[in-house]
Length: 219
Image (cartoon, rainbow, N blue to C red; front, side, top):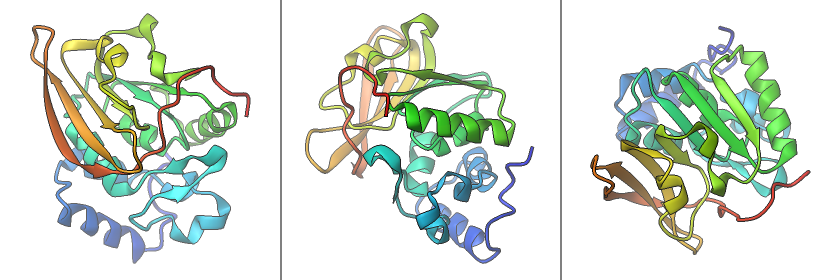
């Protein structure tokens, strides 16, 4: 696979990986997935020099490419297994999707902006990813035809518990999502108890764009 992070300046990638470990990203599979995902491929030209910083960066359609620490934290919190089928709400640049693809069997990802979806699909093709299935549509609706999922990751902030998405999760599945209406949200982990209920854990405060309801956009 051509996705090895060989394009990173040799001083920048090790610094990023150390920063992730120092902040508590310890799962070796998650760290390996981030290390071999070329973040500069997903970063707009204007911000190429900042590709390997541990910070969020703007992309098209008013969206962002997430901070690597948050990507690592959310991926680690999902406790993905090699045979897991993962639903991602909000493809964006495709960076988080690619990290997920390295630690799971299949990734189903939904994006409501056609421009972002086409650009992400081109990146997946360039990286030779064969276990990512894309959909242009409203992520808030989930993907009922492919449910139930082992894991669900939401990369935009829902105002309240994402009940529709939780209903598409297996009884012992895990969903991770930012929850809240304001500029700062609570990153929450919902772990199914096998009986239709969930143990909810607040992980940290985060800043995500809102999860918008309504039709997808030809933008």
